[in-house]
Length: 241
Image 1: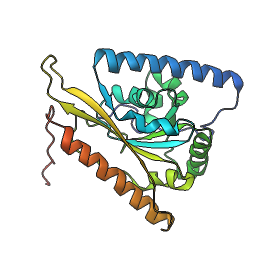
Image 2: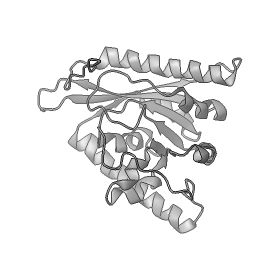
Image 3: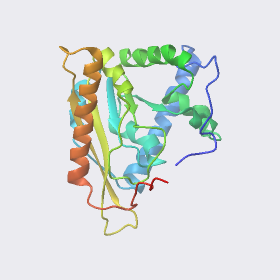
Image 4: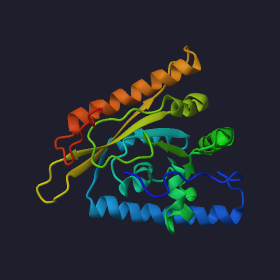
């Protein structure tokens, strides 16, 4: 799924980390408001179950990185907030989100916008390191596009595993799985949290990224294979012309 702002780019002076006290207070208030809305949406409206979240408890005062599947256009905005609870999370998001009416103005208060300009990458990487040093969680989806109700696991960019490797941050896998529901038209959903995963520090950094990516992907595939019991939308690869 895409939107009209899909190719929007960040301004040259875009800021990822704000130090203004007023902005930070407002961002905290809006974040908690969205977290409450997300809880109502996921727990009361959609009835989602979250399993194995206790694995995060020992790391509630530590910067962590989570990787998950991207299958709910609305829900995935809120899911990381519900999974991490009091552990504040910043989700990596595409610049297109800034163009969404009204919501786009507050997206940076709960997300880190991925730059489209290579020259902005050092500042972006510094922002992620800052958030991890502040003991926040970083949520990474495989790509900006949503595949609604997809039961497979799309590949992650190996480059996104640079962040936990560089920060030596505990890494977790988060997956939304789908089961047939007796009471709803849409499938029931169960979210699983697994980890922590750590790279082999005897390897070179690039190899650590590869190894960590493989660990997380393998775990997501295991959960997907064992816990997806219905296919609400069937996806097929387009035939080559």
